[in-house]
Image 1 (cartoon, rainbow, N blue to C red):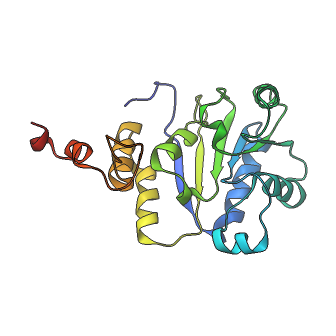
Image 2: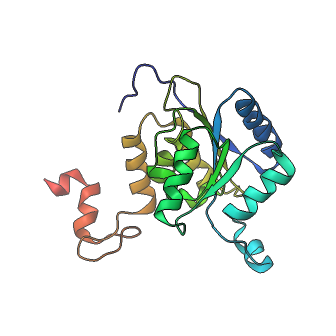
Image 3: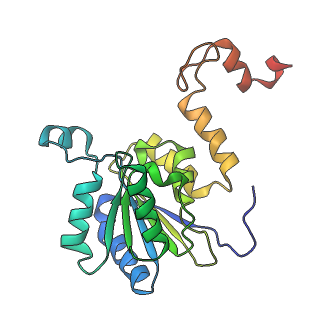
Length: 214
């Protein structure tokens, strides 16, 4: 529940669609100063128009192409996703570590990745699609050194419940607090079956009631 002394708290912001340019300008400044960045997307392949309208999710491939063509034409941009072979993933992360990549566009496969101390910014597209604990884990890809780091939570949702959940990530002091919030919001799941979220059975429900446990 504490950070190493030399590290600064990661500045985390919830970003609405009309604020995208502001964040892209901030990323450009980080890259210009010699830092690196992550962009996390919920999908891998391009979506057809019907699915795009229905789910509004970004894909790694199309987002990397958009960033290279329209936003950061001079940046070294690479992709990383779970369908790549292990050797390919390791090669990408090795090049990221060697600062041969400026922006890594990836799925959540990077949540348990190589420690890139030079990475100071992470954009998480479709942040409402991730659980709080996973968002916290993804945010932990930056802030690994004494540099000030930033986490930008992009969301298309304006629902009060979604914004309240993301605000918890902005305000929570540590991962333990977030894990507890995530458990309460997503549901505990079941003890006797394989379900890991939603309405629990009595045995798992007891965890929420200390007096019943006693």
